[in-house]
Image 1 (cartoon, one colour):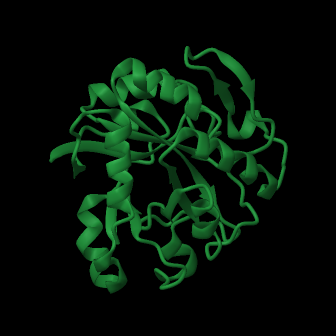
Image 2 (cartoon, one colour):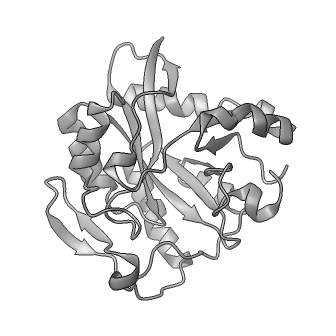
Length: 244
């Protein structure tokens, strides 16, 4: 078993609230500088920069995870992670059918840039990404599982778009095997407030929208990695996340 330091919630320049400097290569490079080994790219309601991130991660020796931060119909943020890039892109195609298409105001919300593995601009997302989809909290886990993915509530210790602040509690249904907090020091507090969390895997991630918000290595999973390959480590990560 080896400790693998992670951050499973990061935004690129595709997210309108993400800085334009948050390119796939810059994220991968900063992650390595910070001592991270497994990183998930989770832009708002889109996986379109994940192919570029996988290319960049390979260049830096980083283990990438493809994902998205889904906004449910209740305005709750849910992290969606996929073991395979191809499955993430299939999810992305289906997700687009559930979005409310509102033109993005770049002067207000910022750019939504789609890049290739060399950080070259190949497109922009014309419709605002962070608004709610028509997928409910109740339906989100099943929707993501159709593509072999894992879904869990994001930053439950935050007021904005956290499941606790929006719903007033951590619900028993639908079932989530994991939950994300933004601050590790709040884990015990939230387990006391919501005993249902005591049986869940708690993930602590940065939700960084700027390179300067990415954290040094703090949180890790112990994973088997012999014979080593990034695919094996990613597979064992998903086995751990699905364990409960």
